Amino acid sequence: MAGPRANWKGYIKFGEVSCPVALYTAASSSERIAFNTLNRETGNRVKREFIDSETGNPVEREDQVKGYEVENGQYVVLEADEVAAAVPESDKTLNIEAFIPCSQIDTTYFDKPYYLAPDKMGTDAYLLLRDGMKKEGVAAIAQTVLFRRLRTVLIRAHGRGLIASTLNFDYEVRSSEKAFEEMPDMKIEGEMLELAEHIIGTKKGSFDVSTFDDRFEAAVAELVKAKIEGRTLPKRKAPVASKPSDLLQALRESAGLGTKETKRIAANVNRGVGRQKATKSVAKSRQAAASARRAS
Image 1 (cartoon, one colour):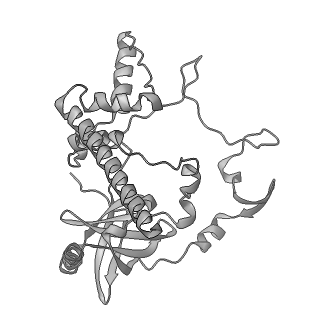
Image 2 (cartoon, one colour; image 1 turned 180 degrees about the horizontal axis):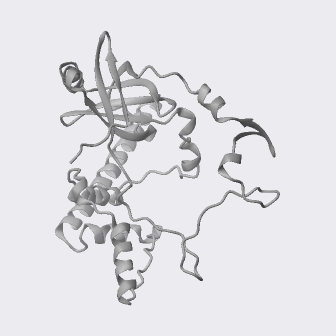
């Protein structure tokens, strides 16, 4: 059986050391269930056509051209050879610009992962880079032209080799401020926080991607099978979000309502609250006594 086909071949360079490498796709959606669009009346597949938005006439491939909108309905036409000429010239080199601590990596910027494998002639330099990054706990930032675009790439040690993840540019990643702008400014504490910590503690584990399955793929496969066999699948009830008034009760039930552990957590919280009140009371008494001495 033939091995995987490289998506890109070139060199990786750090300092004055370089070695030939190749990129291979690390994640693919080709195995996912795919749908075809059909004509409901005939059952035949439908095909996509490009239609002129004003005349309504079909536009053949040879008459299609790229256009950049500068104003509403006003376009600058760009021919294929003009676009090709604007693509940065590639030197086929992943030039490492910096090594950064792995703890600084913001995964929000991750785009696509690729396995970065060595050519047979560059194994020594490749292993030197891999083991050096492992020992120092760092990742490498590099830039090169990939797939007709200048791309920033994050390179990390991964198992026996290296993995290269293309990164989104800053303008491509939306700010989180809008997503969280209505987040209330409140602090959760007391029994609710203790119960949440207890539940998290009982669910601790390790990351093993093989334990997760694609439920959508399985559900669609079962749906297709049921349709073929003339069966109908039962409808699932939509989950209901916990109301704020029910949150504490839901936490208690999740932790095991009525168990000694839940009672112990509640007792610890109550004792903590009691100690805080007692401490505040003593502090107030001392302040009052000090005030009385100064007044006399």
